[in-house]
Image (tube, rainbow, N blue to C red):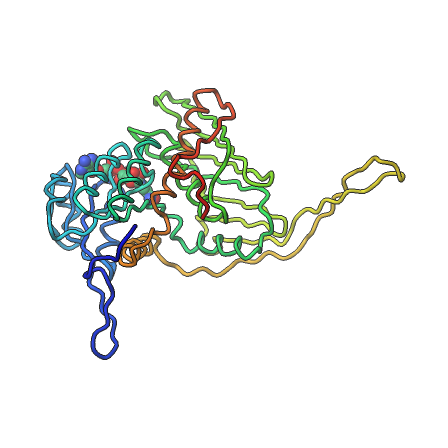
Amino acid sequence: MTGPPPERHRTRNVSGGTEVTEQLRIGVVGAGYWGPNLARNFRSSPDWDLVAICDLDGERAQRLADQVGGVRVVTDLDELLRSDDIDAIAVATPARTHHGIALAALAAGKHVMVEKPLADTGGRGRAMVETAAASGLVLMADHTYCYTPAVLKIRELIEEGALGDILFIDSVRINLGLIQPDVDVFWDLAPHDLSIIDFILPGGLHPTTVSAHGADPLGAGKACVGYLVLPLANGAIAHVHVNWLSPTKIRQMVIGGTKRTLVWDDLNPQQRLSVYDRGVDLGLQALDGAERKAATVSYRLGDTWSPALPEKEALGSMASEFAASIRESRPPRTDGRAGLRVLSVLEAATRSLGGFGAVTPVEADRVLIGETR
Ligand SMILES: NC(=O)c1ccc[n+]([C@@H]2O[C@H](COP(=O)([O-])OP(=O)(O)OC[C@H]3O[C@@H](n4cnc5c(N)ncnc54)[C@H](O)[C@@H]3O)[C@@H](O)[C@H]2O)c1
């Protein structure tokens, strides 16, 4: 983004030193399953004035507008985008529509926050990122988990070296899920795991390859059970299991490090994070003074502790970050490029599925080449 933000987006000092910031005005597009969560959070955010709800289904839009205390209802996106009283839109429509809606909004001079996945192909995601950059507008991906207190804490612990070097990440996201009409289970659920890994690893997510195994045992026409394997830096590995067919719900990530191992159980609000001061040390020992060497294994057994976490709704923090990035004319924490890194892996996963799990190169999008965070 270039140039200062428009006057009304800035925080200004008035007499007595009090800081006053005018609210930004937003329309939520998509009033299905997820849109209401966005509308509720933008409605209650001090940074935002929720002005309109837009959905092709007028009754659905009206129901949501009523729930959030009565805002304008629009069934035609172009009409919404022509409005002068809207600075930004938040998009919660199916993935295949993100590209068209985002490009139309950027062309109309509106900032855009779009639900995960950023788009349904890497090429479309790239066009969105390039258009936003050329227009000096914010494009944000709602990688919701990157705004949760748990993930912020995990990132902090990794950054300060509490876990040591990362050895492995194992992520499980399974439950009885809605089979999506336009995407398979990888494109629906794995954006969560991939965006979290992208956010917590100091260098971001840049795997060279991916291998994906999927199954469609009920004949839904797309993978409903999926496994991804990603090599990480320095010989480490990540494994992601996503599944729409599991009767039990599990949201768990294990992050093993050379010093400590962290377990995140998102369904256990009393103890979401546990840090195990335990691990394995390997040493090499010469045998009989000869060249032969053998590994000696010793186990460290220490305490387990659970970091305290504030209870804060992630979407509220996401809404604040969207506003701050517009006011400060800077990329948001989960910008379009973060969305593209996730799409690069998903595209390689789709190719790998077509090759029955073959190890498949992840082609870094040209927008991302040479990028470091
Ligand atoms: N961040 C999260 O945790 C999270 C959770 C669930 C879903 N999502 C994402 O939210 C998005 C929407 O998912 P959903 O489950 O709410 O879908 P949904 O099918 O329940 O709702 C989508 C709504 O969009 C409307 N719509 C479609 N095209 C439109 C258009 N061109 N203009 C206006 N309205 C249009 C539909 O009428 C429908 O009401 C997806 O990208 C999904 O991945 C994110």
